[in-house]
Length: 503
Image (cartoon, rainbow, N blue to C red):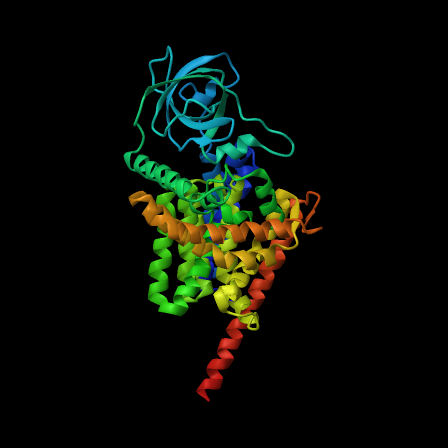
């Protein structure tokens, strides 16, 4: 079977991603030898057999896999005297660094990501990030320069969870808990990021003044991904009903919401309006969340869904999605293995691109009113690809998630829209936002009522013992076979329709 150039391109991109995954499980010393031997053989085969398409493709796939292995392993930092992690698990040290991310404020503590710059008694500059845990007060800000005295520790690892690997995706290899901290300077971060984070803080504060709790905390979760002030009981209800994704700014969340919003605008105002408005909404997410790396990645996934919705060519958009994912992995290879949010975002977006239109057509008897059909199709298409990972990571399956998603997802874009308007008007003058804030409050109250009601139903969610990763892989292999079969049938149907029309 002769492959199209786009199919070959897709195979090579996937081969690179497979190589990144394999690289995590290979000993660096062994992989260097393996890399040299296989790369030499593959390059020789590609050079000698360049005229043989099959052999040339095999050689190219091997090279792409090897490149993925090499790229993952070269991303490992060199832990020497110039890296702050060199001093892990030793005596107390005094060092200076800059807060390079928005402080993660919890009820009883604050987590700071601090990039080390100098070590007491050492003239040379040092580098590396440290996750510093301090008390809730005093408060710290992005861009603060801190002098810290205390012990550095290597992040813990257990049989079930590796905090070390989890933090490595953010290039963090050291932790420091409740050290002595002194602020020695301010405003030393990126000026643009500082402005965005200050706008986010002011926007969040304004919403807190016009919308009461717990609806305000839910809205902040929807708009800026801040879920720490949401009551634990409500968070548990969201988990039980399978809608936790709506209060986490991720590609999973943004992709579903942009599809629902994009479909509505497309039907009301046309393709161009859908592209423009949906893209502006996604970019608005980026601004009000402070342009965090994870949000930027999620926004790109969301924009791909918007384009796919309006272009309508699944095969083209799948290639674009895989290319986008490969570029993100090339920038930070560890997100492919250790960032659950990235994995769910990528798979949910792929499900929306590939399955949503067909599922929406199948649901022809479901009413279009208020985008009920579109929201159900979006939920089901995303769940097809993400639910094995959800079970694998969280050991729980929500049996009523599709129903609850259908009941609340159509409301989400409007709650977010009126919430954003309320925050914007509140920045100008608080009384201007009272009407839109009341509408927002009513929509959020409806969502919490639905979630709390269904969470109380017996067996709303069932606990599942940890499943083997091999079962997850088998599921995706079978799914890929089905996808190829469906793709082949689509092509045959289009050819038959073409010839029927020609006659």
